[in-house]
Length: 596
Image 1: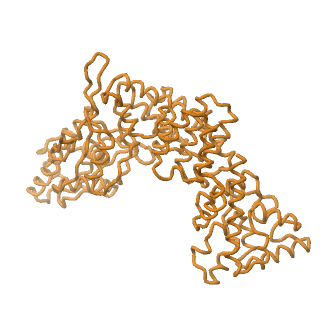
Image 2: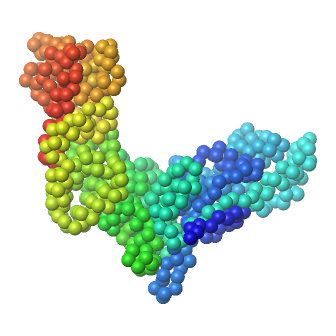
Image 3: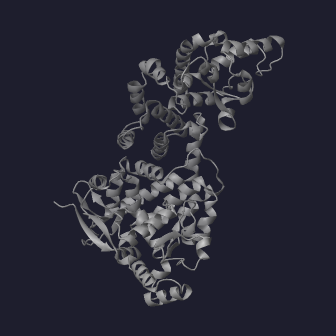
């Protein structure tokens, strides 16, 4: 059975659909990511008669209303938003939202003599041979005859027939055709995605979150456009608090909504530990409210899909929008958001550079919201959120097929006591074999952003450990304020002895160290620079570090998981040092985890 239809439509027809709302383009209020040069090139391709690709639309399923009748679904543009937005900007002169969330116009100029398009610039504005903004040609305020005469008046020396021909071609751009692939309304989200992948030559997987945003914004009955704005605005405010004034100045209607009141606390918030994207926000809100992890289900539910009868019902759509709205409110609630971040920080993850798994952070927030909804005591919530977050990082639980694990975990959490489920996962995946062998092996890596190294650093932050050879400065200070990762066996020393990058850049050779201490360490073998440290201690003049006695020195080595025999180590001891330190680091991570 044919799952789609392919048609050619005039560009002016497509733009009329956009203006009338027959085809929904939710991304039009979100940042326009094309460079202006791409808008210019699109207009040139149309002028030249070159193909500009297809746009793909998916008709919303018809939903059964309470009176038994069916609503007629809008078309949702699922591929081609940037091209259509570019057309509305260049031809209709519409504003777009740029990457800084500013409303701007993209003005494309045309030179009838050279038949060349260019983005408007100051030089063009001074040049009478250019039509400064082609949107003025298409708005119907001037006829082709008058346009030609006016141009020839200002440029009497040019070929009249040439100008008449090129301006005619320009004016006829909206009469050019563009291909539209319309997908059947009864297709499920997975099939729609598969069709997109097969059609698109680049094979880019269509984001489920983009589908969800399209579905949300195209629903007028349940204020979908306001909900979509709330999601977008919150995510932007989390990154740029100054955007608050932009909203109050340019979107007074939204400024009156409860959503805006709920997120207004962000205007003075500069915390960057968790800056969610709209995908993150939707995923957390959906999973915590619906006890499902697949965003494809969200699109179906917002369409009113009854999974048992395979029909679409208004009551389900209404309830789904209500639940998603509640989920978004819970996500952006100041108390929830700040309390969650305090819990993550209390586990030692005080900086975004220690967090490389956004999905682990997302699901930890889901755990927080879910356990709070289920009435768990706040102390238990803190403990469980910390442990689950670190567990998921150590096991890489959400690094592949995250939706499947989100779906499985939220169902388990909803059906059994959380401590029972956590114990099941610990027994199955955090056995002695994990701590004594698997984790040690995972620490055999040269990647400084390794999740295992980040957990090790978090364990040091939580323990309030001092930095390497530091008497007073903590690892927490070095991570959050000013500190760098340096090599215990200095890099230049190892390079000089013939080691390659993957060998000297090893996690087990990394340590947070004050830069001034690192300078004093230089590129000497450990036995040489430790000789200086020990000599300073014996002389009562700790010049390399602030450590004043041998006990404090060995304590410092212990908290940084550094084998004591490093003080006598040379190049030949490097491999044994790495192996021993990995074991010490794994042991510290284990103690840290079970202390959470």
